[in-house]
Image 1 (cartoon, one colour):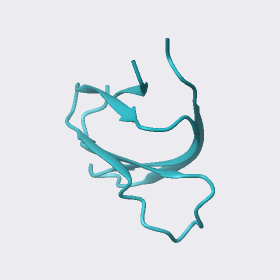
Image 2: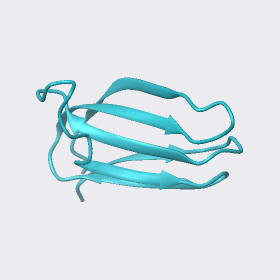
Image 3: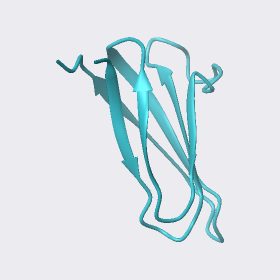
Length: 77
């Protein structure tokens, strides 16, 4: 069925979630996978390859901040 990760935005801000393979450098283009969540939305982000990805979540609210981390994507039967 493919690989996916479900994101949910329960805050009152819009968020942009970007993914890039962890093997790429930190300053590389993070537009490999990108989705924008409005307040209260949830979204499933699909991946074409299993592996480890860096992600960046940027909130566009009054207190704009960026959170980063790593997610491991495994194949789903």
